[in-house]
Each structure stands twice: as structure tokens, then as C-alpha cells.
Length: 220
Image 1 (cartoon, rainbow, N blue to C red):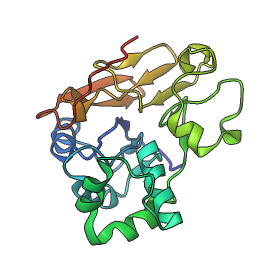
Image 2: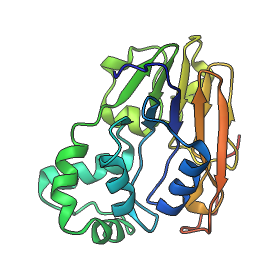
Image 3: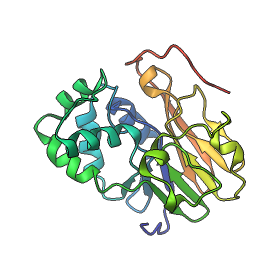
Image 4: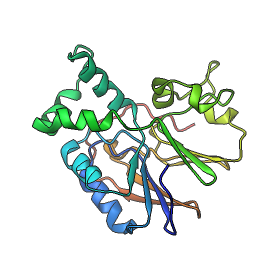
């Protein structure tokens, strides 16, 4: 965990290669050098400019990135040396990343599965509240939405520490006393959202267009 200093903590929701919207959001947020920036993961895939997003991320020294399920899938391809489980949109992301992909994968392989700070934690997907975060797999932390039985994981989360997550695209943020979901479907044409701590202020910018189609929204 990096020290937060005297600045804000800004947690940015799922970007998915939407570099223009990321820049729109940053113009509103105007982050300072002593702000702690955290990405919930899924910086790449589905959108138009994974290269631009990763170039920004690598050039931002006060940014920490939690690994998302899309980064984990790319890491799996990289480690196996095969793209046999490639998604339909992965080819676009590989093309966007270009010759820098190998170096990107080495960098992304060092991203943590979660980060913490004063009174909060950030994870990409979710976690089983009955188990410690450190005992749960990277895959579970990046992919989990529902617990056995079908209920959203955060409905069983009773800790007072704020859990901030992405992964589950909704048309509006999930806002609970102890959990906030930031994936507001930018790549699907809705918005890119960030959370400013400690005041718990949400900031969103509209998507410029829908880059992918989403037919079924789970806004429960």
C-alpha cells in the first residue's frame, strides 16, 4: 500500500479501453501529484484504445491498479503462450497493444488482487465475506459477483470497512453503507465513474458512444 499523504484517494471504475472518456474524467477530477489514484481493473478489452489507457497508466506514478478479470485472461494467454481461450474482442485489444504487449504483460503480472487504505478496500470483482481476502484466489477476487445461492456477495458483507469494486456493469453505481460499485458501463455507452475518498463523492462523465452492445442489464 502506498501512503496517501495529504491528498485525496480517487478510485476509477472499469475503463475497458475507453481512453477518451478516461481523459474526460481526469479533466473533471484534476488529480494532483499527492492524490492516490486506484484503478479497479479492466483497463483493457472491449473498448477502442487499450494502448492509450495503458500508456497513461504507466506514466502515472501515483496510480495503483488492481488486476481485473480481463487482465487475468491476458496473463493466462501470456503464461501459456497460447490464445486458445481468446474472447471475440481480445483480438482487437491485442492489435491495439501492438508490439508493447509483452512488456505490458510483465508489468500487469505484478498488479495486486486488492488494495487497502484507511477505512476502505478495493477489489475488482468481489469476495466471500466469510473468508479473509488473503485466502481467496486471484480468479475469485476478479470474477465473483454472486455467492452460492445467487445473492450478490456484498449483501453478505457486514464489515464497516468500505468495499469498492467494479466488474458488474450497471447503469448507475451501487451505493451501500459499506460497498460501492463503480462499473457504470462506459464501454456500453453509459458512463465512466470515479469515487473520491474520504468524502465518498461520486463523479461520472458520459460515454461518447457505445463501443459494445449489452442486451441484458442486471440493475438489481
